[in-house]
Image 1 (cartoon, rainbow, N blue to C red):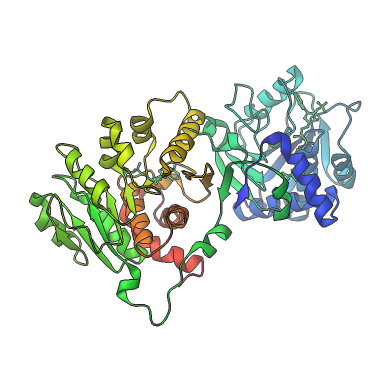
Image 2: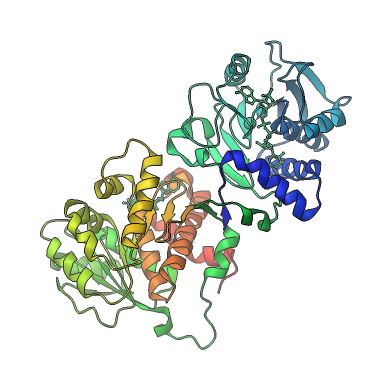
Amino acid sequence: MIKILPGEKISALDKRHLELTGQKGIELMEQAAKAFSSWFCKNFDSKNSIIIWCGAGNNGGDGFAIARILKEKGFTVSLIECFEPSDNLSTDCEINRNRILESIRSSKWRGQIPESSIAIDAFLGVGLKGTLRNEARDKIKAFNSQEAIKVSVDIPSGLKAEGVAGSDVVLSDYTISFAQPKLSLLLPENEFCVGDLKVLDIGIDSRSYHDFQSDFYFLQKQDVKTRHKLFHRFSHKGDFGKIMLVGGGAGKVGAILLSGESALRTGSGLVFLNVNSSEILITQIGLREAMTSIEKFPRLDGFDAIGIGPGWGMGNREEQLEYFLNMAKCPLVLDADALNLIGENPALWNLIPVKTILTPHLKEFDRLAGESSDQLERWAKAKELAVKFKAIIVLKGANSLISLPDGRQVFNSSGTQFMATAGAGDVLTGMLTSLLGQGYSPENAALCGVFHHGLAGELAGKRFGRGTIARDIIKAIPMTFSELGIS
Ligand SMILES: NC(=O)C1=CN([C@@H]2O[C@H](COP(=O)(O)OP(=O)(O)OC[C@H]3O[C@@H](n4cnc5c(N)ncnc54)[C@H](OP(=O)(O)O)[C@@H]3O)[C@@H](O)[C@H]2O)[C@@H](O)CC1
Ligand SMILES: Nc1ncnc2c1ncn2[C@@H]1O[C@H](COP(=O)(O)OP(=O)(O)O)[C@@H](O)[C@H]1O
Ligand SMILES: [K+]
């Protein structure tokens, strides 16, 4: 997994990469521009006219290189230079500017903007320092006044790599960031200026990160495959685990059915659903592959993992939760009402076995950890709780954050807004419990489960768009394994 470094360390990271590989800065910039252009060509037709706003630093240098590449690909490209002739251009910006001077119409920033259907913001990147100067503010306002689709290179101009955006910031529809997401791009508070986020690999040598300290990591497809257990010709049902999912109170049995079905689709050998006695019939009809039980205090021996909470209800459940926490000898997942119960009775924290996976969404997290004024505070509290109770806390949402007992915090890269639908969290609980039951370590179960859940959401979202429902995500789970080449 790559580390997410603070903005001020990124030029040092580049330098380290150049030392290790013998590459030149201009070559790395070309890789970044090529990666951006290849994403751009996949998403936009060359009939579009493009205007690229270039600053004087390396972000502007990326912009000039992108202009050249997109022109070669057949787009109509014009440029606005957001600097004065007296300004010092970075070396690589100057080189890329000189490479296109003759072929592309370029105008100085004078307040007039040629029409275009797409505007690319390569004005300011992670090199932004201190308070934004007045002349930069005017350019950002002018950029935002365009009707075009807006795409930012690396980071919306005016946004710092860390922290919450102010009012002088480019309002992008898409932000295409290089090598690693900057922390500010992951804050829900900055969604209004970041838009859709895509992080592109630009070939930074992974050894370059060794010299830098950070507890923040970014989980991508290439990090997941090696964490999986592989099954073979002689694998039998027992190898895939026997799990119990506890929930399904009156009127909410759908939640546990979704968890059960997703556990089966994730590969569980045997799934038991423990539900309210009133719900036994509907549970059996709802998921024929599952076995059911209704005891409040069922026997727990023989289970490889237990997931507790989806649709459980909170009335008179405390004693039951205590029983599961005290008696279970296998790994646990706690979700939904199990978390709400802990929020109401913080003493229960002390009963949670080490390496239990907790999966709160924002509201459940606030019930567990107290109100936070912003997401940065939630991230800090999640780390504190994970370390203190040696738990794995999955703070759900776009780019779910997995906080590990050793203090590392891992942002997930997969997922889509189409997962913001009832029951999507129950699907995750089933997947995580399933992987634990198949013998994955809690860390691997959390990282693989969260990544595959997001990927299943992406696949379902591609097919059903705004009408995606939780069952569509479940159906896509098997495809996530084939996407990663896992049997
Ligand atoms: N590994 C990677 O990720 C790679 C990253 N790459 C790219 O490099 C980018 C970083 O480039 P960078 O370091 O040259 O800085 P950059 O963002 O262009 O900003 C400098 C400009 O901003 C200006 N400026 C500063 N403060 C200001 C203020 N308050 N108000 C107004 N203006 C202000 C400053 O002006 P100055 O203060 O010098 O007069 C100068 O003109 C990065 O985001 C990515 O796009 C790729 O090319 C290769 C691999
Ligand atoms: N905008 C989004 N982008 C990516 N993933 C999302 C988004 N919205 C929700 N999700 C994911 O969908 C799931 C929703 O979980 P949750 O809120 O518990 O739903 P429910 O309680 O209805 O099951 C979480 O795993 C979350 O990460
Ligand atoms: K930018």
